[in-house]
Amino acid sequence: MGEIKLTRIKSIYGDIKGLLSQIPPIDKRAFVKRFTVKTFNDALDKLTEISDTDYSSYKVPVSEMSRNVPDSYPSQIVRPQIGRVVSRLEEEYGFGRESDAQQSQSVVILNKNQNEISLQINYTINDLINETNDEDGKEKLRELRDELDKSSKNWEKIKVILIWLLNFSKDLSLKIIPLILQKKI
Image 1: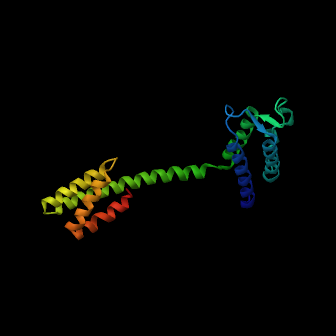
Image 2: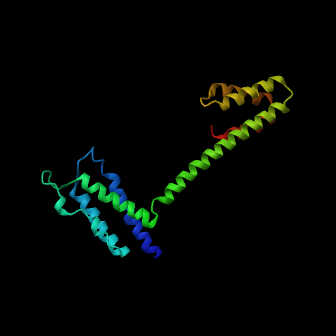
Image 3: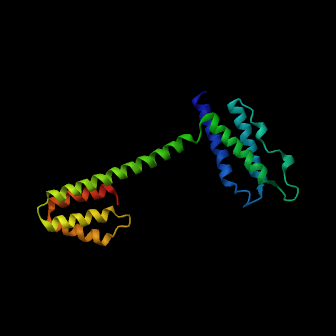
């Protein structure tokens, strides 16, 4: 299948999926306007033409129009039909999967990177504690390490420690601040 053809099919898939996302759940709204159903049926005609596959069996027939609510179709008929087409296109062409995979992967990588950075900072702070000869410096570094490890950080305490470190040692401050910034806390 040509790339242009696939792109056009994917575009129609996006339109149809967009329609589905705009229809409230059946328990929220019982009817869908005729315009929405016509848009869906027209999209199926285009899809059939471009893909050389007959999608007409998914159309919502005019006979399903509500007799009680003018220019409307029952949601319980329309939503499943649109959902079936979306699912079929996702299965046949793999649409929707690449964005799901990228989102999942980025979350995993983000968590992995944050954990690695956290370990790196703690290791570095522990190294600096061991390297520092001054007991006050060691104590402040321990306080900083412990505060950074907390899920609910006390920023006032961290600020006081960082100011103290800036006054205590330029070299030590220059080693710690980039690590804290890298952690994005």
